[in-house]
Length: 314
Image 1 (cartoon, rainbow, N blue to C red):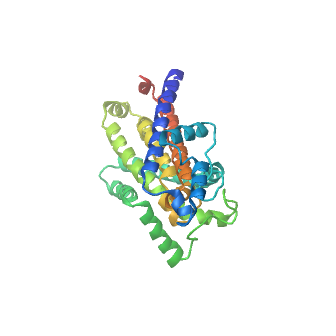
Image 2 (image 1 turned 45 degrees about the vertical axis):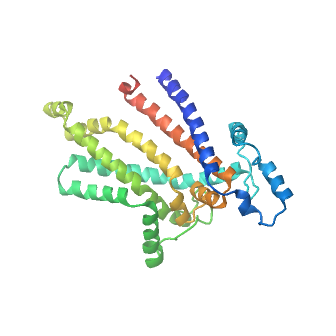
Image 3 (image 1 turned 90 degrees about the vertical axis):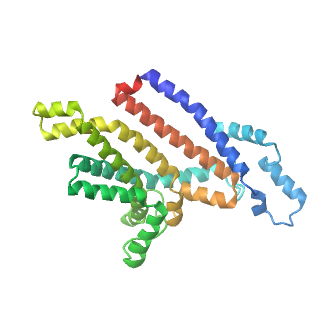
């Protein structure tokens, strides 16, 4: 098990290097210059050259890449071109705000997805199966931004039940019911797609395992239905866990539009602002750090899967 974990950790090193190279290259291939937004057109050339030298934009790209990579390796993410503030502080604050949404959204989405998928799988071709499948397909099919806009119109504008935007007065972790009310709409919106995707996978896996010989043997032995359900769900757990890891990674990085609609100061909104401002240091740091978390989460899921099912280590 230890050898398997070490091998999987070694595999992540070239993946992270490749992600950093792609992120750096793609951002620099986009037309435009951050200094065009920062400085007026009539700015003196000496000032432009001075700022280019300050941020290293006057160096060849490969030197910029290795310089940036060396700084990232020691935790220095540079300063924002737009605000001049350290990127690391901005990113830590934004990531913590994103986790406030992503963790409850993941718990809600995974729990509902497993429940709906298991209920549908064990009640195949009944009205329960059709209802659970319809809910799951709706969750998968609904784009995040569309769900966010509709929920704001319905629950904030028409019914006036919940606030439409922003964090609660405490900021960060919720300290009161008012803070929680600010989280409800974005958390539910973010949980829809994980709920739908996991529900469809769990249903298909349960149906497949239900049709295998060992399940028929368990029934033949006269095991109670609860024990059979336990064995089926235990065998359906590894693929569901792998998908949960992917979905949690998407929640961390794929919430740009949701955080923008709800004006939530998380990593998605920070990335969105960095794109519009052409703030290259912030954009590079956000992409690489989110990719690091994505790889780390999937590495953890792989190791956990191998611990549960020894066949994966072969």
